[in-house]
Image (spheres, rainbow, N blue to C red):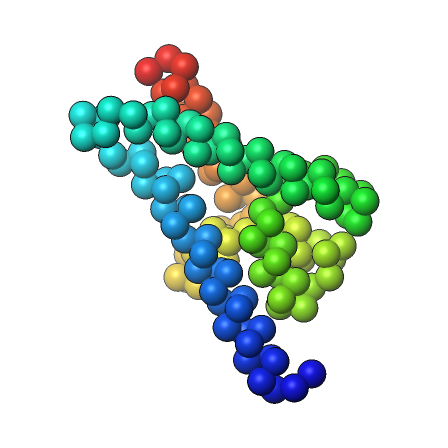
Length: 133
């Protein structure tokens, strides 16, 4: 591989890494937007998370023949890890978390599992807000 191509891969992987940020900021940041400021916030937040999770589940189903497991897998993360040199069926490709990596870069240690628990808690809160709020 030419060094120029390696530079393109590094740039592309960093770009993909940072493309996650707006999604994560919306996922968590919408909790801090009062309904008085944005009356449709709860509905938007619910459908935003449902769509993100549906896309991840769909991608997990598409990857089933390669990884022999159905899971919620981010397509951006799969592409990011592939650019970093991990084959699709390598667990480091599909069992990776942008949030965990970002927090680790900020010297805040959290595991992939810890992130999944945090995401499930936020999902439950959003569902409660949508249906009972």
